[in-house]
Length: 141
Image 1 (cartoon, rainbow, N blue to C red):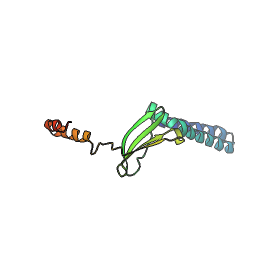
Image 2 (image 1 turned 60 degrees about the vertical axis):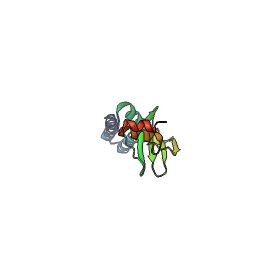
Image 3 (image 1 turned 180 degrees about the vertical axis):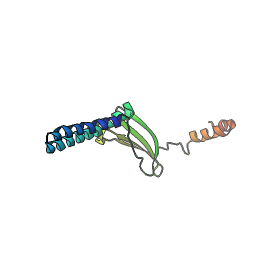
Image 4 (image 1 turned 120 degrees about the vertical axis):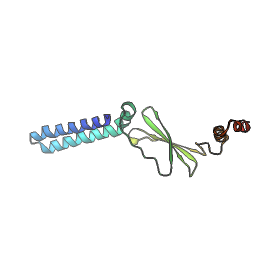
């Protein structure tokens, strides 16, 4: 909601500049001023406000998970969003940072991460506990 209000304010301000300067037959200045307001509003949103709105005020943001990867989790560190995805083909977990304006982005890759515990004793123990309590005792060391 806050995102829509922000863009409504930017567009309204650009229209006010266009109307006030255009009314006095300064059309070149009116169009230039409206473009400056709109481009300035876009830059402020992209490089500062987008993640602030999403984190603090329930704004709107869309991130696409890369093809072939599975999303695991997302978390905030200050005003930066970290996304964890799992690539089953390479058995690698990828942590990707989405910073303001995507200027500084961190990436951490964990090889052989096995996030679902496939093949681990913890996974077998968990699966056995759902089947029968006696099987848990047999698998426990």
